[in-house]
Image 1 (cartoon, each protein chain N blue to C red):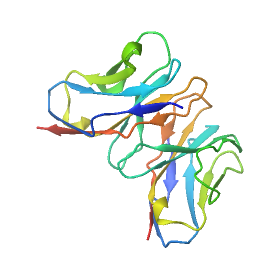
Image 2 (image 1 turned 30 degrees about the vertical axis):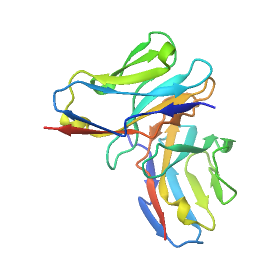
Image 3 (image 1 turned 180 degrees about the vertical axis):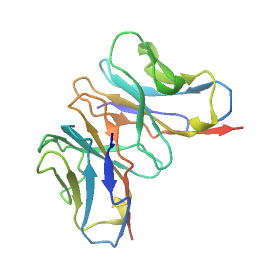
Image 4 (image 1 turned 60 degrees about the horizontal axis):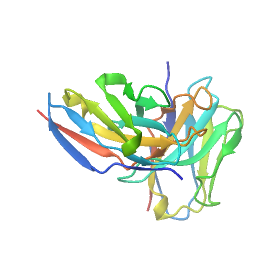
Length: 113
Length: 113
């Protein structure tokens, strides 16, 4: 069975600073990988996904993530954080052939002005 | 267009009672998913419908949980003999078909006292 680890429960950054949220997955074959964002009172929104091909994936809101098979990682990055990016971020992995993701426990992003 | 809606947004019930949670997917979406999100955790898969049938119910924790989607659109998650451990946010998502991007509703917060 697949699993996801998000080692950081909270991350605090200053507005305008760069951001990297860590995600490590466990799965025996090539996984489907996702990043979702959850703002208070809002539903989960898909930021980006990796199924195959180019390992650097561009998403919405200026986010990108890089799939590194050797490190079993799929870290999320953004070059300059905005105050509106404060939210909960979830990494998720789907087994090949299954589109039902297994989610990590999430990382809460706090943005200081 | 309208997104996924869930009603009620909040539900407080006493231990042992029966509850129903409703999900209205995006019109035309054939796939519908239920997840449960406990405090401080990521969403956990419960059940997936393709059309009217439950294609995968492997995430339902026990036989107190049941879900239906009789006409292939609205779905109801039913919980019998609720327990305090059932307290969580129940999320619904829909996608155009299996494998497409899932769009999440805002969730129903269930509190069992």
